[in-house]
Image 1 (cartoon, rainbow, N blue to C red):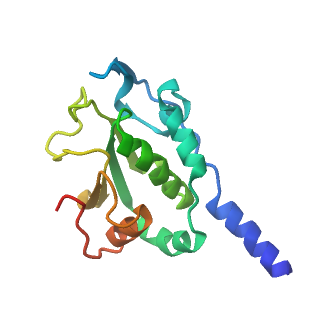
Image 2: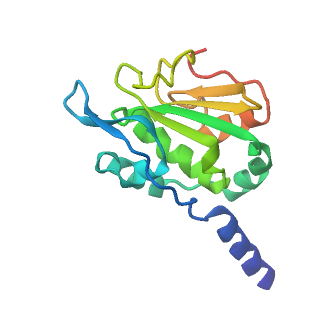
Length: 180
């Protein structure tokens, strides 16, 4: 019983740690063609946590649970990985997948310095052209890099689950996104 309590305490600390606090980046709010206000440009987790335009994020994030067994076997493979995320605060797919994706990264204790998040217009552009040359046609798009080389990407929605697709990418297994 004592060993079970110690294991539970360890797993709770290891896999349920709060994300590293970040300061929100200066962000542009614009009106989308739908008339809805959206975020545009480079953002971070703090922007999603605090913006009045992203109340869907905290709600979605709090509804997600990640299997600690999956996390413990996956965590060693995320070392040295960098990720670029292209999303739209206006997009239903982004609203569904972004909270789940960031919850996964938190459970893996992924370094927030190794992720760049870009909020795009409905035309899939950013004012700074962060998407240039990256073939971003659907959002969200999650691009995984190791040693500055693209490992693979998840486009719009996972083929199976985010966890399964991420595991395949990190393990270097055969994987093609939903549009290939």
